[in-house]
Image (tube, rainbow, N blue to C red; front, side, top):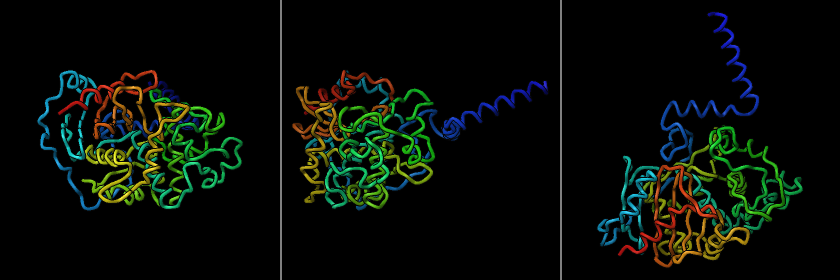
Length: 376
């Protein structure tokens, strides 16, 4: 028995060592975090698993409630779909007022929820702020002007901020969420995001092809941070969170080095996410101030030639009868903007099986727009 235990110990140690040497040591961190607290996979409620930077608010201002607040009954179609997709919140803003608000699964109006990739859209908003502040000349500025190491790469020297926002970076990166040994899993749990990025090369010329890559958003965050010379969370607080009178501070998860997970993980309340949508609906204008240049906001919402369903890390649908834009996060997080209806819809949840159309847009978004935009 002792020999068997010794052999098992030696074998296990060898496997563990091999995993670490192969660069997959983050798997042990993921296991430890999940055993310590919360769900065993990435969740909307996991802000305490990771270090974070505070996104401070200032003079909180509650949403004004519509005269018909929570008087509308949702259709059976919507109720069935929300239940199926494990929805935790649904908010409807119309004409700048809170029309409907509902929470499930122990969530409340003060519950922080993980934005996941909705953070990518917020990151593009910060690029607009950086242009307004003179840190950047335009979204077409070369990344190499901020990160000189890219000037030595035959493809990287052509990379711009626009390429990163429109997912035309040409990086050698496979966007895969289901496999624990893929780069996305490592990105979520790694201790050093910058070191991971340094290992990502290019496979083609930037600007020639659309391919959704979370590495592009992380590189955008790194370049933006170098440009503004402060933390992304601090800039988000100063340029947006405080001006919008957000009801609660947010948290932006970081790696162990203090770098924000720019590709995801802004933890905020659905009410505050709704203000992000309202700001975009108003083309960057808020209570007498132009927080983001109107022209930039319109460019941010303009689909690219490479993919007419994608703008500056914001999704688009111009084929439907009612046109809309939306921020889209893993597991079904949405900020939906419907200009012609002057509406914003926020939906959060925890469902990894949403059906999508041929352009990878969740069909649930279309359903929410069609069903909720006609509420009287």
